[in-house]
Image (cartoon, rainbow, N blue to C red; front, side):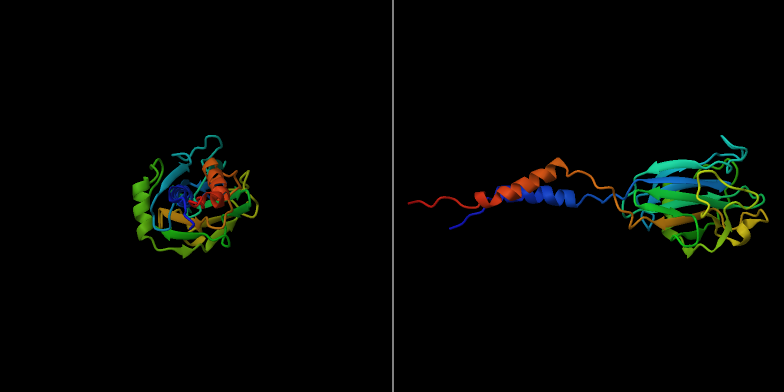
Length: 233
Protein backbone atom coordinates (compact mmCIF):
# COMPACT_ATOMS: atom_id res chain seq x y z
CA UNK A 1 0.00 0.00 0.00
CA UNK A 2 1.28 3.46 -0.90
CA UNK A 3 0.85 6.36 1.46
CA UNK A 4 1.45 10.06 0.82
CA UNK A 5 3.18 12.44 3.17
CA UNK A 6 0.21 14.82 3.44
CA UNK A 7 1.90 17.42 5.73
CA UNK A 8 4.70 17.82 3.19
CA UNK A 9 2.21 18.09 0.33
CA UNK A 10 0.27 20.74 2.21
CA UNK A 11 3.42 22.75 2.89
CA UNK A 12 4.55 22.64 -0.73
CA UNK A 13 1.07 23.52 -2.00
CA UNK A 14 0.80 26.48 0.37
CA UNK A 15 4.18 27.84 -0.72
CA UNK A 16 3.31 27.48 -4.40
CA UNK A 17 -0.18 28.99 -4.18
CA UNK A 18 1.02 31.79 -1.96
CA UNK A 19 3.48 32.94 -4.59
CA UNK A 20 0.96 32.39 -7.37
CA UNK A 21 -1.39 34.88 -5.71
CA UNK A 22 1.19 37.68 -5.81
CA UNK A 23 0.25 40.32 -8.44
CA UNK A 24 2.52 40.22 -11.46
CA UNK A 25 4.78 43.22 -11.95
CA UNK A 26 5.30 44.99 -15.25
CA UNK A 27 8.71 46.20 -16.34
CA UNK A 28 10.15 49.35 -14.78
CA UNK A 29 9.02 52.39 -16.77
CA UNK A 30 10.93 55.65 -17.19
CA UNK A 31 8.56 58.48 -18.12
CA UNK A 32 9.82 61.75 -19.57
CA UNK A 33 7.01 64.25 -20.05
CA UNK A 34 5.78 67.79 -19.77
CA UNK A 35 2.53 69.70 -20.22
CA UNK A 36 1.36 73.19 -21.00
CA UNK A 37 0.74 73.87 -18.36
CA UNK A 38 0.15 71.27 -15.63
CA UNK A 39 0.04 67.52 -15.16
CA UNK A 40 -0.09 64.92 -12.39
CA UNK A 41 0.65 61.23 -12.99
CA UNK A 42 -0.91 58.17 -11.32
CA UNK A 43 -1.21 54.39 -11.54
CA UNK A 44 -4.41 52.43 -10.90
CA UNK A 45 -6.89 49.91 -12.23
CA UNK A 46 -9.25 50.54 -15.14
CA UNK A 47 -12.07 51.33 -12.70
CA UNK A 48 -10.14 53.74 -10.47
CA UNK A 49 -9.18 51.30 -7.72
CA UNK A 50 -5.76 51.13 -6.06
CA UNK A 51 -4.75 54.61 -7.29
CA UNK A 52 -1.14 55.62 -6.52
CA UNK A 53 0.36 59.05 -7.09
CA UNK A 54 3.67 59.24 -9.03
CA UNK A 55 4.41 62.95 -9.34
CA UNK A 56 3.61 66.29 -10.98
CA UNK A 57 5.30 69.34 -12.52
CA UNK A 58 5.67 72.85 -11.10
CA UNK A 59 2.73 74.58 -9.41
CA UNK A 60 3.20 77.84 -11.32
CA UNK A 61 4.04 78.87 -14.88
CA UNK A 62 7.72 79.53 -14.19
CA UNK A 63 10.12 76.69 -14.90
CA UNK A 64 12.54 75.22 -12.39
CA UNK A 65 14.70 74.87 -14.39
CA UNK A 66 13.62 76.39 -17.68
CA UNK A 67 11.82 79.60 -18.68
CA UNK A 68 8.33 78.11 -18.45
CA UNK A 69 7.10 75.11 -16.53
CA UNK A 70 6.63 73.19 -19.78
CA UNK A 71 10.01 74.10 -21.31
CA UNK A 72 11.91 71.21 -19.70
CA UNK A 73 10.47 67.76 -19.18
CA UNK A 74 10.52 65.89 -15.86
CA UNK A 75 11.65 62.26 -15.63
CA UNK A 76 9.99 59.69 -13.37
CA UNK A 77 10.80 56.01 -12.81
CA UNK A 78 8.22 53.60 -11.39
CA UNK A 79 7.30 49.91 -11.21
CA UNK A 80 3.65 49.29 -12.14
CA UNK A 81 1.64 46.12 -11.80
CA UNK A 82 0.81 44.32 -15.03
CA UNK A 83 -2.88 45.11 -14.44
CA UNK A 84 -2.27 48.87 -14.05
CA UNK A 85 -3.26 51.74 -16.27
CA UNK A 86 -1.02 54.77 -16.49
CA UNK A 87 -3.08 57.92 -15.84
CA UNK A 88 -2.14 61.56 -16.43
CA UNK A 89 -4.37 64.40 -15.30
CA UNK A 90 -3.67 67.61 -17.22
CA UNK A 91 -4.97 71.17 -17.04
CA UNK A 92 -4.13 74.58 -18.47
CA UNK A 93 -3.50 78.14 -17.37
CA UNK A 94 -6.28 79.27 -19.76
CA UNK A 95 -3.74 81.10 -21.94
CA UNK A 96 -2.72 80.43 -25.57
CA UNK A 97 -2.50 76.66 -26.34
CA UNK A 98 -2.50 73.57 -24.15
CA UNK A 99 -1.01 70.12 -24.58
CA UNK A 100 0.68 67.07 -23.08
CA UNK A 101 3.74 65.33 -24.55
CA UNK A 102 5.90 62.45 -23.37
CA UNK A 103 7.80 59.25 -23.99
CA UNK A 104 7.71 56.16 -21.79
CA UNK A 105 10.50 53.58 -22.01
CA UNK A 106 10.90 50.10 -20.51
CA UNK A 107 13.15 47.09 -21.04
CA UNK A 108 11.12 45.81 -23.99
CA UNK A 109 10.58 49.09 -25.85
CA UNK A 110 8.72 52.37 -25.52
CA UNK A 111 5.42 54.11 -26.17
CA UNK A 112 4.75 57.79 -26.87
CA UNK A 113 2.05 60.40 -26.55
CA UNK A 114 0.29 60.12 -29.93
CA UNK A 115 -2.84 58.79 -31.62
CA UNK A 116 -1.60 55.23 -32.17
CA UNK A 117 -0.20 54.02 -28.84
CA UNK A 118 -3.46 53.20 -27.07
CA UNK A 119 -4.23 56.48 -25.28
CA UNK A 120 -7.74 57.41 -24.19
CA UNK A 121 -9.00 60.69 -22.76
CA UNK A 122 -11.88 61.66 -20.48
CA UNK A 123 -12.96 65.29 -20.18
CA UNK A 124 -13.70 66.72 -16.77
CA UNK A 125 -15.52 69.82 -15.65
CA UNK A 126 -13.19 71.02 -12.89
CA UNK A 127 -11.20 73.97 -14.24
CA UNK A 128 -7.94 73.86 -12.31
CA UNK A 129 -5.34 76.58 -12.89
CA UNK A 130 -2.10 78.14 -11.69
CA UNK A 131 -1.00 76.86 -8.26
CA UNK A 132 -3.83 74.32 -8.06
CA UNK A 133 -2.90 71.18 -6.11
CA UNK A 134 -2.94 67.87 -7.93
CA UNK A 135 -6.10 65.80 -7.42
CA UNK A 136 -5.81 63.51 -4.40
CA UNK A 137 -5.83 59.76 -5.03
CA UNK A 138 -9.35 59.60 -3.60
CA UNK A 139 -10.63 62.38 -5.86
CA UNK A 140 -8.87 60.90 -8.83
CA UNK A 141 -10.21 57.39 -8.26
CA UNK A 142 -13.80 58.67 -8.02
CA UNK A 143 -13.50 60.62 -11.28
CA UNK A 144 -11.94 57.66 -13.11
CA UNK A 145 -14.76 55.38 -11.91
CA UNK A 146 -17.39 57.67 -13.45
CA UNK A 147 -15.46 58.73 -16.57
CA UNK A 148 -16.44 58.28 -20.21
CA UNK A 149 -13.41 57.39 -22.30
CA UNK A 150 -12.69 58.22 -25.95
CA UNK A 151 -9.66 57.75 -28.14
CA UNK A 152 -7.34 60.76 -28.42
CA UNK A 153 -8.00 62.68 -31.65
CA UNK A 154 -6.37 66.11 -31.34
CA UNK A 155 -2.63 66.70 -31.63
CA UNK A 156 0.20 68.91 -32.82
CA UNK A 157 3.61 67.71 -33.98
CA UNK A 158 6.61 67.87 -31.70
CA UNK A 159 8.59 71.00 -32.52
CA UNK A 160 5.72 73.34 -33.41
CA UNK A 161 5.27 76.82 -31.95
CA UNK A 162 4.98 77.89 -29.18
CA UNK A 163 6.79 74.94 -27.64
CA UNK A 164 9.61 74.05 -30.00
CA UNK A 165 11.57 70.86 -29.29
CA UNK A 166 11.48 69.45 -25.76
CA UNK A 167 14.81 67.83 -24.86
CA UNK A 168 14.67 64.15 -23.89
CA UNK A 169 11.41 63.41 -25.74
CA UNK A 170 11.28 61.59 -29.08
CA UNK A 171 10.66 63.66 -32.21
CA UNK A 172 7.87 61.17 -33.02
CA UNK A 173 5.87 62.09 -29.91
CA UNK A 174 2.87 64.40 -30.31
CA UNK A 175 1.38 67.16 -28.24
CA UNK A 176 -2.06 65.72 -27.43
CA UNK A 177 -5.22 67.21 -25.93
CA UNK A 178 -8.84 66.22 -25.54
CA UNK A 179 -10.46 69.23 -27.24
CA UNK A 180 -10.06 70.70 -30.77
CA UNK A 181 -7.10 72.90 -31.74
CA UNK A 182 -5.50 72.19 -28.35
CA UNK A 183 -7.57 75.06 -26.92
CA UNK A 184 -5.60 77.72 -28.75
CA UNK A 185 -8.23 80.22 -27.70
CA UNK A 186 -6.91 79.79 -24.15
CA UNK A 187 -10.19 78.49 -22.76
CA UNK A 188 -10.45 75.88 -20.03
CA UNK A 189 -12.85 73.67 -21.98
CA UNK A 190 -13.20 70.10 -20.76
CA UNK A 191 -10.79 70.41 -17.83
CA UNK A 192 -9.22 68.86 -16.08
CA UNK A 193 -8.56 66.15 -18.66
CA UNK A 194 -7.44 62.61 -17.87
CA UNK A 195 -5.32 60.61 -20.29
CA UNK A 196 -4.77 56.91 -19.74
CA UNK A 197 -3.10 53.88 -21.29
CA UNK A 198 -3.15 50.19 -20.24
CA UNK A 199 0.20 48.66 -19.29
CA UNK A 200 -0.64 45.08 -20.24
CA UNK A 201 1.88 43.48 -22.54
CA UNK A 202 4.89 45.19 -20.99
CA UNK A 203 7.13 42.21 -20.20
CA UNK A 204 8.86 42.15 -16.81
CA UNK A 205 12.60 41.77 -16.56
CA UNK A 206 13.45 38.15 -15.59
CA UNK A 207 14.41 37.75 -11.94
CA UNK A 208 16.14 34.89 -10.07
CA UNK A 209 13.89 32.21 -8.55
CA UNK A 210 13.01 33.29 -4.98
CA UNK A 211 14.36 31.01 -2.23
CA UNK A 212 10.91 29.66 -1.20
CA UNK A 213 10.21 28.64 -4.80
CA UNK A 214 13.60 26.96 -5.00
CA UNK A 215 12.59 25.05 -1.85
CA UNK A 216 9.34 24.09 -3.56
CA UNK A 217 11.24 22.68 -6.52
CA UNK A 218 13.52 20.70 -4.21
CA UNK A 219 10.54 19.32 -2.29
CA UNK A 220 8.86 18.17 -5.48
CA UNK A 221 12.08 16.44 -6.58
CA UNK A 222 12.26 14.54 -3.28
CA UNK A 223 8.56 13.67 -3.17
CA UNK A 224 8.76 10.25 -4.92
CA UNK A 225 11.16 8.96 -2.28
CA UNK A 226 8.82 10.00 0.51
CA UNK A 227 5.64 8.49 -0.90
CA UNK A 228 6.31 4.93 0.25
CA UNK A 229 6.64 3.38 3.64
CA UNK A 230 8.13 -0.06 4.29
CA UNK A 231 5.50 -2.75 4.69
CA UNK A 232 5.59 -4.90 7.83
CA UNK A 233 6.97 -8.39 7.25
